[in-house]
Length: 193
Image (cartoon, rainbow, N blue to C red; front, side, top):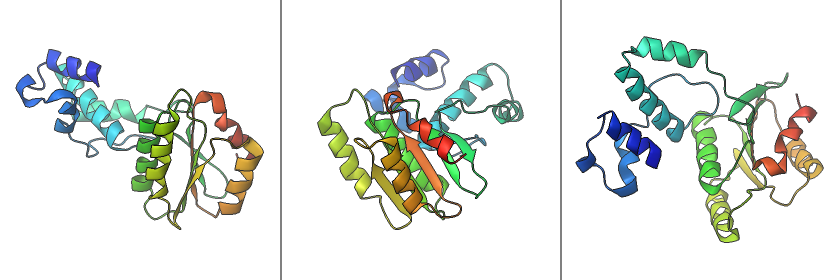
């Protein structure tokens, strides 16, 4: 956030006196301004709006920016959608995890797929305090519904997680895999794809 703030100040797209501490990001629009592939939420759209502001400084039009975004493919573990032959969507967001990124990914999945059954598998979140992780799972527990199952897989092995997915999986389910690299949660994909 600090780098984004400095960048936007440097190109004169925001006024310093309209910014209060770290809350400057709330000044940006979170609404989708472009079509973006993969898992998208308010954080991704805030980044896209920052990109738009910089691109405008370089003279690009909205059409030019969208054309560039149309060629963008999320990298492995970066919110990439992977489809199986049953209409299920696996969201590979396994590159890294911290409480904020987990929260953002779960919220994005819920808002992006409101009508579909959803399963969020949250694996190990490395290098974070137990207290922050407990707070995160208390918050996520409140988002768990019949249509959205959130699994704390911090201490589960791949086979245990696979069993949970198999039990919950229905046709056209969205499955979010979110964890730190150490958990190697992406290895689950080979069982389904």
